[in-house]
Length: 87
Image (cartoon, rainbow, N blue to C red):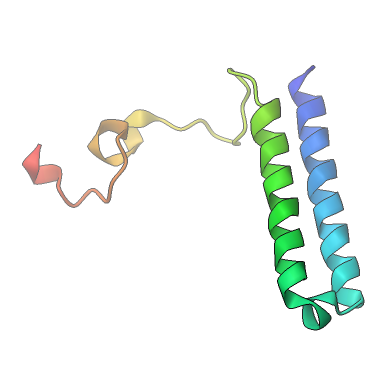
């Protein structure tokens, strides 16, 4: 499966998520049954994230620009960059 079809699947999933949210908003589901709305929202978001993570293959580019470790504070270990003097 190519990277292009992964992107298509990702956009399709996001489109379905937005459609589901729009329909629930028009039906005022978020007002009538807020708890259920939140559970459904979390399930939909978890499903979209799972689709993206499970369809990712090593070597696929998921961002427009690659991340460079040299650009991150502490040599790629993350952090705020405030402790640079301690290294």
